[in-house]
Image 1 (tube, one colour):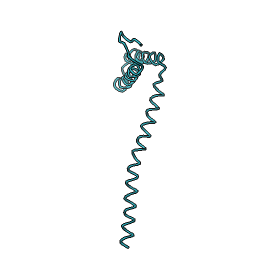
Image 2 (cartoon, one colour):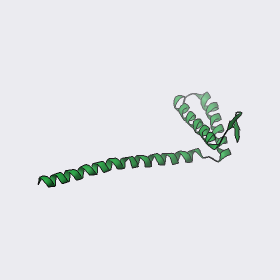
Image 3 (cartoon, helix red, strand yellow):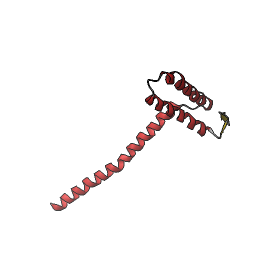
Image 4 (cartoon, one colour):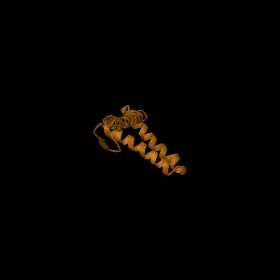
Length: 103
């Protein structure tokens, strides 16, 4: 088990969660305080060091995991469109059948 600020972490998922939270916090603060020099010099660097140190200790690559997650979301969005396409095709076919019956 790893210790971080005297807290017992039960498994690597807890550490991954902390790493992701640090990166999200950094991204949020970048948006809010992009002009704050004190933040840029001290806090951002400090948070990145903590996240990087934890990542090295468990062999976790945040950027790789982020890309993998984005790919999954893209695939999921593409799969969601299949239902819409099937519905559209079904409507077209039923229109064709109606036209044939009318003629």
